Every structure is written in C-alpha cells, then in structure tokens.
Amino acid sequence: MDSVTDGNDKALSINQFLQALAMTLAVRNKDTWEHSVQVTKYAVRLGLRLELSVEEIKQLHIGALLHDIGKIGIRDDILLKPCALTEDEYCQLKKHPEIGSKILEPASALDCIIPIVLHHHEHFDGKGYPQKLRGEKIPFLARIISLADAFEAMTSDRLYRKAMTPQHALEEIQLQLGRQFDPYLGKAFVKMIKEVDFTL
Image (cartoon, rainbow, N blue to C red; front, side, top):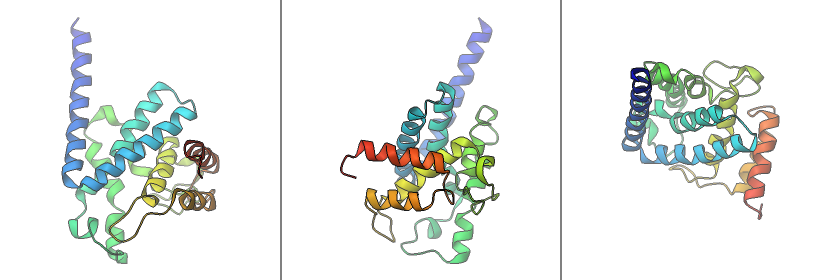
C-alpha cells in the first residue's frame, strides 16, 4: 500500500512542478506561453498521426509545453524587443534551450524531457543550436517540436512582423526539408496541416 501511495505522491509532485513551471512561464510572458500551447497542439496531433506510443505522446506533450521554458532567463529588453535583434542579442536568445534544460535538471522524473527542450532548435543539416547535432542524432521528439514551433511562429504575429499565411509557412517548411527539418517528418507535418485546412 505504501508503494502505491509513494507512486501517487511522486506523480502528484511532478504534476505540481509542471503546473508551477507553466504558471511561471505564463506570468513571465503571456505570448510565449500561448505560443507553447499552440505548439503542443500541433506536435501532439503529429505524434498521434505517426502512431507514437502513449508514453511518447505524453513526453511530446510535456516537452512541447516546456520547450521555451528557458526564456524565463532571457532579459525583457531582448525577449520583448519590437524590432530585429542585434547579433549579440540573438546570441543571448539562443541560450534559452540550455537555460531550459538546467531548469528541468533537478527533477529526475523529467530526464526524458530535457533532450527535447535542449535540442528543439537543432537543424537536420547540423547548422542549428546549441550543439549542432545533425540528422537522426537530434532526438526524434525534438525534431517534431522543431516543426510545430516553426510553423506556429511563422503563422503568428510578432512585435516586429506580421504573420505569414499558413500556405506560405508550409512552403517555407518544404524549402527547408533536409536543411532545417527532418524530410520525413516535414512531409508528414505539411500533409497533416493541409488535411486540417482544406483551403491550402
């Protein structure tokens, strides 16, 4: 009985930790939180389409919600800048995956989420960050979130630019297959979005 109770208590504490992180991000920057919620919807939908396991879908869900948690550690004058960033400011912003992984590090139950958070800005051709991983060396779930993250970012208004149309964003993704994005996953993502929106 004690082991069951301990297991329930552990699950509860992890859920409370996740809720606390989510609320922290929402309070820190509402736009970043809303972006993460939308990224989660796209990522989980693709995961279900790919028939991932229940555990993988759960990891995808948590990883997508927390993929930008490291932006808590980015200064407001960079995070909320209403125009293009300077090279130095962009270098600071690019630290958010590593900051995010450090935030999650104390929670051993989230060990499987850290690679997602750390590597969601890696590129399939090895030109991403922070570790310039290439191809299948990039964690599979991070490759899914990379697509969802890019599509949501392109189709949303930003302080410094207007949103692209979904059609334009999908064209950009197709141009980047094999470069920024996994070709197989990218094609599946494009097909999924087109099936959801019959006007594309």
